[in-house]
Length: 237
Image 1 (cartoon, rainbow, N blue to C red):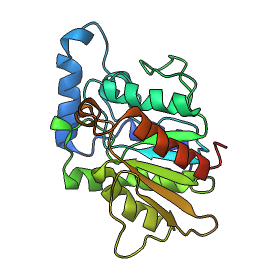
Image 2: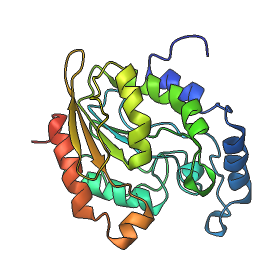
Image 3: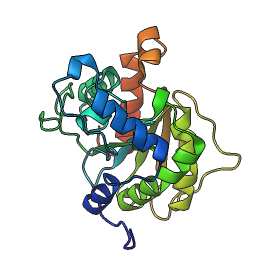
């Protein structure tokens, strides 16, 4: 833990061994042992889930935390659950993913210039990490932003929790966050001045089943935000 986390491989290697939050460690391991009936024959990951995507991404998508039977099972962000199905289908539709599905590590999914991460890397009970857990996990997001900073041009935040978690991290990484802080909303877009290039920050409703099943977030709504952020990052024409 002493040396700086200055590359993605080192960051991920240390992150997956983290046991800093007792409640989250207990929960992720309990879920991995008991399992859901549909996945009874599978071996759950049951550890912190690292970000997914190229280490030189120009666009970053920030969620909330891994799902108990999604990322906590498969070991990859937004993989193996309906929220991930919704997200990766939209990324593929706009040309930022190689395929519309994400089932397991090694399924062939590749993201183009785009990385997916979260402010909390362990699955929390009821999908609700505490403020203390978010703060404890912040060191990983701090390090990831600083590694990505030279090439990063846009960020999409899925939901208000991630928005509040990310703003102070962006500020500490060198981008200028306006005061008062910009409010989260679907379609929100704020340009943050940086040391060299500006960063385009976008808000989007979370891809939770609560939002997608009720129609609060539709595929076209998500695709529109992804396309705007992809253009801001120079990934899409």
